[in-house]
Length: 253
Image 1 (cartoon, rainbow, N blue to C red):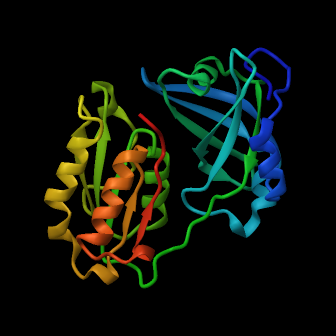
Image 2: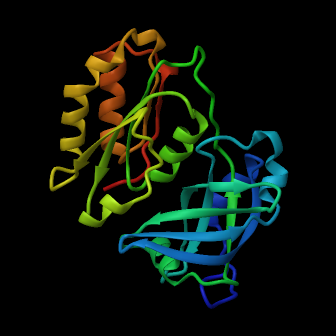
């Protein structure tokens, strides 16, 4: 990886070895621009290093890549990010960062045109629900915002209810791609409860919107603990079939 204003590459360690054994593909992205969307959210525009051409027909909603960051101690550090507005013809996309402490956010804060970063593609996938649901039930937060938007874009006529967890006052300005005629957004402040408020709100409101569990579709991506709790509740208490719940923990508190 080339760090911002640097050129040295970082070894990927044992994780990189495992990914190569799984036939993961490596690419180098180049920063072309950056936008500070809010004080806690930053968008980085990039050229794709050939990724989108290589993906071809496998390009899909919520597609993510692993980025490799250098830490102060030199240990490789990888985090996954969703492609935003991928343009195969131009070979470009953006990545969006919910900023906090850590190597990934520090890189994003400093990233400038010409900087490069290494990425690995392995493990991402998406299967559209069949039959198509009458309504999307979406649970996410600022970290999964790019994937939420990608999902909503891929179902342009389907109504959706979105429970969206926020942490900062400025999160009200984040670019949720919703339309008042078919999208119902229910914002939940995270507070000090580490996801408890989101889980409580979803438990109180989602059952009335579920309909027939076998034809529902719930897309869930929050912190790992909240995601695990709600996924288990959906399957065990509401009897939503496993293949109608797409749940992935995006971060650890």
